[in-house]
Amino acid sequence: MSQFKSQLTGVPRTMLLTLRGRADEQKQPNFLFQDERAVEWSQSLPWDDQLEALYNPFSQIAWALRAYQFDQVAIRHIASHNNPLIVELGAGLSTRYYRVKHEKLNWIELDLPEVTNFRRQLDSETDQHQFISSSVIDFGWMDALASKPPASILFIAEGLLMYFEAHQVQEIINQMRRRFPGATLIMDVVGKISKATGSKYAQLGAPFLWFPKDEQEVAALGLSLVNVWSLFQLYPERWPLLLRSLSWLPFIRNSCLILETKIQPIEN
Ligand SMILES: C[S@@+](CC[C@H](N)C(=O)[O-])C[C@H]1O[C@@H](n2cnc3c(N)ncnc32)[C@H](O)[C@@H]1O
Image (cartoon, rainbow, N blue to C red; front, side, top):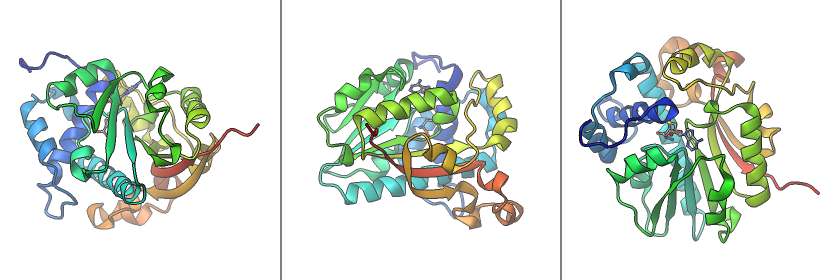
């Protein structure tokens, strides 16, 4: 990694996994998308051997399918708004902007400073595509969006919220409810069964901390549900038959949910 000036630790390090998952997608016989940018970036970054324990064919499918499902929501949001703004929270090295690029689009990639600095070594900021260095829980970043009609904003929290305590997630949602009522928020959440996987992440300094029981527990934070998908029920041809067949069991269904939500106003 000699040419890269930042050594990643903790949660930021995990973005290399999801980047590789997307880069490897086009090697699959029934791939969902091609992502040249992810391939290019992935090849230019040396692999972190300690991540190897978390990278396998199953996790590749999960990260690629999740990315693709989030893409579909982004594409729909862009098509249905005149001046859409997409804000990726904990963007890591997301390459979604290039996958769904559209002339009328504005896009913000928000992540911790060490990650944004890392991105700047690979990617170029433009008026349309901006990078914000901030923790999602230092809420000053919201000021940069103050002039935007909330309904035009799609917030994406992909592979992010499981790294926060429940009270921190509630505080993020509370702030969004104050500032952006009516905006769309798409997120993925993991259930308790993921605690086993989470322990491997904990060894890397990136423990999972939030395990909502189901989508109703998430909605109770102040969100209304627009769409709910269990990752294991999407694109069934990609999953092993056993997992597919058992995906109706609540503890499997809820172990990885993708939720498209609307941010509810705070009632006075
Ligand atoms: C698993 S990666 C996901 C990256 C990207 N969303 C994707 O799906 O490829 C988790 C990301 O969350 C970011 N993150 C962790 N804590 C954060 C915080 N407090 N504020 C903003 N981003 C954070 C990490 O830096 C990392 O980029």
